[in-house]
Amino acid sequence: MFTDRLYKTAKPIWEASYHHPFVQGIGNGTLDIDKFRFFMEQDYLYLIEYCRLFALGSLKAHNLQTMTVFADLLHSTLKVEMDLHRQYAERIGIEKEKLEQVQPAATTVAYTSYMLNVSQRGSLAELVAAVLPCTWSYYEIGTRLHEIPGASEHEFYGEWVKMYASTEFGELAKWLKDLMNELAEGKREEELKWLEDIFVTTSKYEYMFWEMSERKEMWPIEINS
Ligand SMILES: Cc1ncc(CO)c(N)n1
Image (cartoon, rainbow, N blue to C red):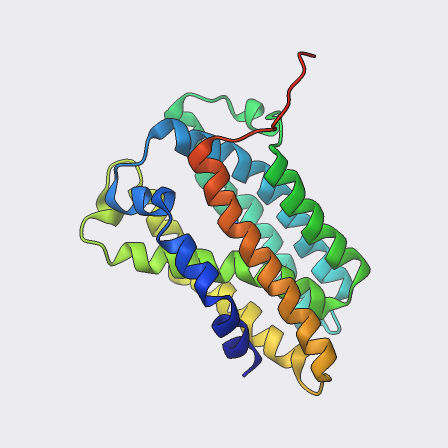
């Protein structure tokens, strides 16, 4: 299966993400809330762009069934996943409206611009190769953290773990994997390699997103405006 190949190639990056101090901090409940706040703010901006990818997925779909699932992905990201961020914002004391006005950090801009660029100029297969590490790796991280005793009951980080370990989220990842395999069928090695490169690149960006959040890194240079 093509997704087995993708998984095998990106595995060292995914492992580094899982073992990243930020991710482990969510799992054992010791993560500094300020770092989590930074992450959730940037992630909210990230998800807005991620939603645009799902809208593009509907646009590029070859049949109504695929079109419908992308519409579902769009809807559940906007309504369910982003509700998690809105709820955390309320708990941390950030106003809902403020969430959309946060300044995007360098890595957030780089990651979302890359994903959108690849998806806009490419076919549906390229779009799926770009989004697959996002959904799939969060589900993997969620389910692995869920196995840590107490992680999903943690009074602050528990909700986050439960969201990404949920069967609903897992189904979306599974559906994208199945679609990736379907679209890879009959493609030449050169094309498969290109899809693999995209998958590896967004996997690296996923790692960079954890690293950026751990460091609360914005831009190397700022101006007062
Ligand atoms: C950066 C990032 N990747 C993937 C997901 C999963 O939707 C997310 N919320 N944020």
